[in-house]
Picture 1 (cartoon, rainbow, N blue to C red):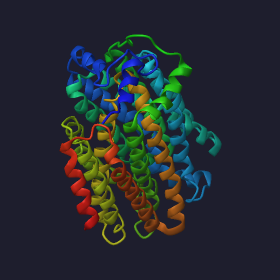
Picture 2: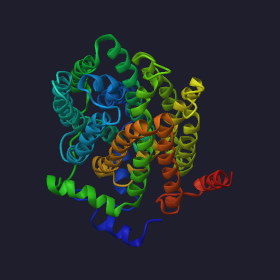
Picture 3: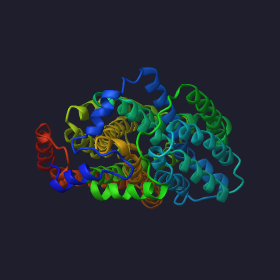
Picture 4: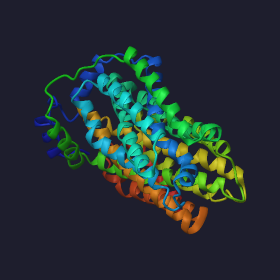
Length: 441
């Protein structure tokens, strides 16, 4: 339930630069009345652009052993390449993503894509590890265009279809993360790791041209705050909105588990006794795609008031997936099933998180997604660096224990905060029963 103080704060002040709105979301209702249905082809293009952009951050997972050999980095330290990209991503979330609430989103998206082309070329021709890390950080910094795309799609959608639209675009993001491994695995075997980034630069340039032609103009309505006040308001949102704090905490933990798995997978599968090629290891991303697609209805479930139920089921599946992933050495098929469960769980919880936070402040969606995704990026960076350290210390068993630890923390955090979650409805009471059954079993 929203307190009287929160209602008064929303009805008298709102966020910096936002129209005055009621706690019931008057601005959201007005926006819903004005927003037509988003055409399916445009939603599809949003999803493709988001997937292509986020893939730039995740190609490195499949290339770590090749990069380690070229620059003579140990397995225990090579995770710094992924962490550099995630650190840049976190910085971009704080400094770039809030601009979506200040500037024309169409121009912002196209500008970031064009700058990404230059950063990708710099990575492809990096002569040493220092330049590579700087280039990866810049690629990550600019890849936050993904969040501007998600927020833009949510703004264009009517409120009754917002969960579906956000779910579709977010599915593109997850597919980009997973297919990045398939593409990178094929290209590194074919032409080396540098070819991966050159190819991505070409496709990013093509996508910038396509979006330039089809993205609608969508100017902000009302007064806009100054840039410093805009950045400050991101932190204000964390203070004022419990649902943002809760869902950001869950995101940090689930993406730490997600990154722990995918960062060390190529190191494990390419080493004896399995000794699989990059192309073969990359194909495991297709199993993740199946799981991500299966979670596509999570946004619709959130629209129906089943957000907590979806979260509880997703986190339980995430924890269970590590039992199968741990059997990789004895039963390779268990890895495939485990990957499907892991990515199904991650996608379901992630879509649910975003669907919920987008209902909080309709005119601050870019800042909401910035605050939320900073924790996503922190979790991803933490998972990457701790995963390679765990692999160097205890092999694949250490990675699995680490991932299960992050997953269990996420489930416990959700259980502890569920009673304070704003918007929890009676339809979600079954999630409490499900958790009780899990703990008793």
